[in-house]
Image (cartoon, rainbow, N blue to C red; front, side, top):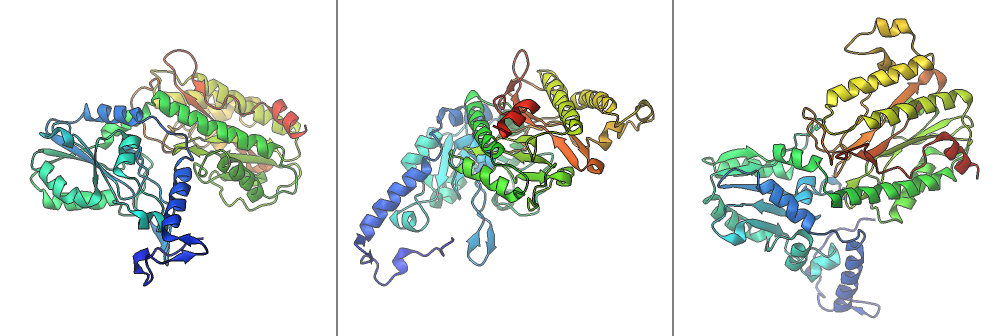
Length: 469
């Protein structure tokens, strides 16, 4: 339920409001305690993560330059309703501040040491705490971010003008992800437009190339957070294995996942879940989740929990009645073998394009073994669209982190600390099923990647045993 926001001071009886035996002062106290509990949904994150992230970013900035990072907007739906706030991932990565109308400024060469790092947050008070929830105080913002200079947002224009007169270059933050498709003007875009108008003589630079590299290599703290997200996903999957049977609805399975995620400190799905039974699995981005599961169906579930804004991304495919048919099992095990072999290729030095070529060869061999391709199909294939693409038409991996499709440099060699999904699939609309399997793995300095989903059941016999226990 969404209540219209209204300042309590608009009431003609401000200061005398009583709800039962609750005075305004006691309401403030209660709401404060509630908000403290809500803010503790995630375990506290060491602010040194953000201190180090900022230091790494500033080390790559030009001399006499500053960089600015804005929060996302709160987007309207209709009437007085809004979408749930989602923080811009770059300011989150650099500060840990998950609050609207926040601005981070980095100015390593600032003449005043207090201006090397400045965090601006919306000024809060007890009235806002009642109507909207507790906001960050200056002290709390410092504790979360490690930034010592925290100012109210109302001071931004004055301070920003002062430091811009001391800088030659400003780094603007833009979304240059290779899958980005932005139609809405963001808060960041509006800031860039107005700043160029006010300071036309400054040089401009881009934050994104620096962030692409930094964010693609995960800190051990980040990997721990992602492991937590994967562990929550595991709990959801184990829950649904005992729930699934012919006759349930796809949305009921979705609800079971969400129940388990929320009760384990995740605030939501990391992305819109896919619960696809039968032929729905052959629609790669099927999200309607509104069909009834039939006996003999396979159910493809592409689902992940978030934790502390870090994503997990899991896919498992299970039999509705608890037993794979002989044909389903053969295809399932082929997909699992491709996943295992593809995972072994994710080592330092591997190139993105070459990786996918090699995975294509592995998949081609499996499709030949299943009788879905023959030698002539392979000999006569179009190099731009190899024969295996008829049954496996999407990529095998993508970066994952604060975004489900995270930042990463695709034209440079993979390196330790990169985190990738591995998600091969075989899609057979003529046979009324599709199978995809997916884990999240961390590239290591030596040896095979660390599988963050190693404890999530994936072997066919284990899944059957769990569904029939």
